[in-house]
Length: 410
Image 1 (tube, helix red, strand yellow):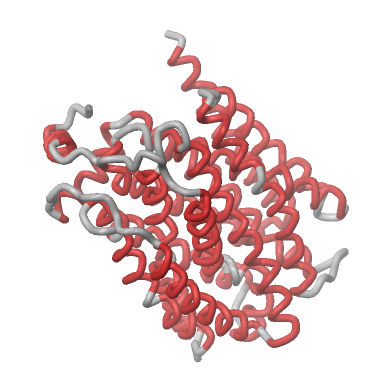
Image 2 (cartoon, rainbow, N blue to C red):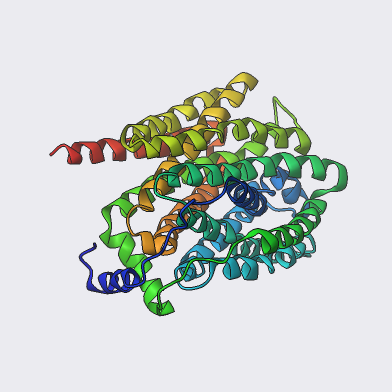
């Protein structure tokens, strides 16, 4: 229990209406459906990454300015996390998912039809906002799972989410090479309409919720972040890891489209498959969390995060290093994310949406900052500067882990 009276009152009210757990937990089929849905929905945020050099040419913008296509999507997602996700502790999550998802096809169509660069940025902001259904479903799955299976369930759902992030690059690169970059978003709009029908048929009704005031719920998000050390620590880890992840993926298309590679969008998109192999670490990280290995696992993944950029620096001119660096970067970032979420869901079982809101808002603000800074750093110092910047972010995460371990031994 926190030391803040307002948060305590909210959590105490939740305890008066304890959340019952279904005896058998969540079924494997539903876990797979939710993992697939997360992957499809979150892909909307990342289709643009292999296309940035094309978008820069079409709208005649600089590389640094074009990076705002990614940043706007991440900022929109962060706004959804802050203002929509807490409603999952008040409303039926099934209805919340379907209501927000229904707007997604229209936001994606707006991206394709954008006549100017400012209109494109505004449309990307809307895409990010509607993609927040992903993070409504993660705590939804966690609440349906038993205590014994929660780490595995969260790991599986996040595996689907992460494969969606990385597979989006491959799909958008291939489609844009044949049909143009706008076709990617037309296709995405169709996929979101199909996903709406799938979830409408598959998602169960949510578990009963205690009565709660929306304004108080929003305020409690900030208080949970300030007053709960675990949420605060894991939010810092998440922000640093996703900032490093975004620094790389927002700038790599510029490297791969220039010398010595000169790859087209389809080939650049294939590099997402290398990262998708790293997404397999999410399931392992979930099992690691279930076995109590979060502490040393965090040290392993933060160390790997920083070291991966040393390999990626060589990747500026050597293909093997680029492939190896992507693999290790994605293992580190994704493994960290699973460990973080497994830990924060233990803090307040009846406030999982608000705890997730606090964590994920920090996470995506870190990603948005990484995207914006990455393109600026690339413009100023090229790939060497990007590699150094990403390595510093990884080192900062590792140092934070060391400090936390030393504090725990006092």
